[in-house]
Length: 250
Image 1 (cartoon, rainbow, N blue to C red):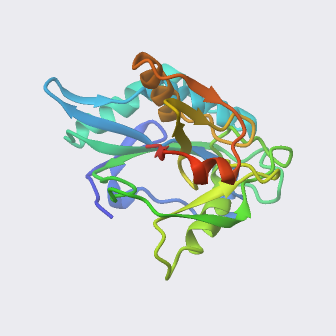
Image 2 (tube, rainbow, N blue to C red; image 1 turned 135 degrees about the horizontal axis):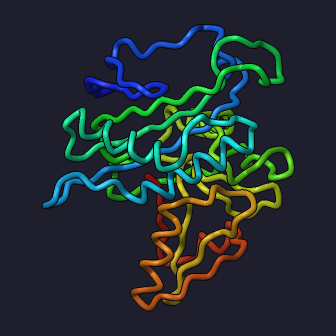
């Protein structure tokens, strides 16, 4: 992967190579952490971070869901994110805030493990660098909404996505497509799903999917273009018969 010079770590900047954690860090063992994927884009006025406050608000929502209380405000994290991009002199980049339970406690109850927060940024191109994306319906379903908090961006949730992506090895497919527990379309491993039919846009409703920030922006843009956006359950037959489909995500 590409690297940069500095990472913001618990209130201060450290060199990229010095941003280390203990091997007995709680989240490393149990997956109780939260993260965001954010983008900064080059503009004529410098780097612009896409919907930074919304991403940070969601990070705090996710940490609250797992009982991880950060010793910072949303505004402080926003400012640290901006400074991280500036300090690394980046015009466009991917930004990864990660909140986790640190070293000092083992066992399923993380109470007593210190809250930790890092913010890293580095150059990273398109996640799916293909003009057309071939999808495989995963043999795994999306995590059942009654087994966790589906709309929180929790570290451990992504084992589900990793398994779906690993299924693609040695195939012609670029990405997986999850169904939910009812057999309806959910989302991709790291993206929300849309389809177009008869001049209308359709996307699965919230409940089993991540409340994507890019998804919300796409819905706003489609409506601004005069295209009706309908949130409803979609079957595989609906997708097979649609005129076009696309993913949204960071």
